[in-house]
Length: 435
Image (cartoon, rainbow, N blue to C red; front, top):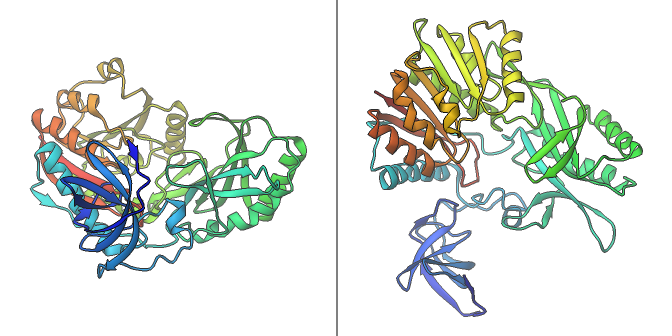
């Protein structure tokens, strides 16, 4: 990578959007990526970095604006990095995501579905039911900064409120900052987990070491004032947390009649309305009957397992997290569902896959993390499956795994996107495969 100190501006035409939401133009035979630019626009840019395969540039001004450009209503849109497509109209965001899925399936998997599902749109604002805020103390004046980490940076963008968070959470940052400022230290929470359920809100305070008794009392009082459940944890690495207190439990419903308990730090889909649509679409495409045995891989706390179990003969959910497996089993008991069982197994390890039962399932749903399910897709043809619903948060790994499933005898029948995260470059996809 070669940073450039050149301040010369030039004009380029934006031809498309990259997978991360940046505009793409051609310059001197290479792609140049421009954050904030939209397809069809002529823009003035200043070159930022030159790489072997592509260049990166800063948007200076828009000379001819796209008709799909809108003014971002959030004052943090340019700096926060969380909603990097606020300048693109919501329906255009959805169309772009559907087109990107089609292009990625073709480019990586050499596949096209027989049928395109209608995309599922979301309310553009106040849709997100959970978030993680970063906390730090300003070394110069001792003030507490609370907000989101800026894109590709450790710096915090301080926020007072966030318009994509559900109303119960959106104004909490301003109310929390005063309490955080009063903490005596020397330890501060480094991150705060916010979550909303059907029955209230919860806060999870996570620090590098145990907070003082006085500071815990201050934060518990804050929770009481906000009518929020509270929990405390230790952060031992960027991705490993050990919660010191019993998990505050909230509930949400993936479909009417099913109620799932979860902790603020459990993985759940942040957009509840779109999650309900996703669960119903999975049920529709799999069409389980009382003759079917269903396999739910990466099952989490039972988001798909329990609705499917209400329609199928039996369901087996498999998940790498033992804590989530316990939560799924407890959710089944609480809902009076006795035909769903759960197993803890690492679905990224070959030995776990070898231990899976063979030829006993007719349907499967897969909802892997961003890395996809490469090893798993090499084995699924041995299970006697009739249909597979693959839920993905990354079009590239979905396309890769779709290519594997195609080579193993499954056909891509249908695919489509769900706007789980409006104003971002992230899209949730669903693909249906049949033997």
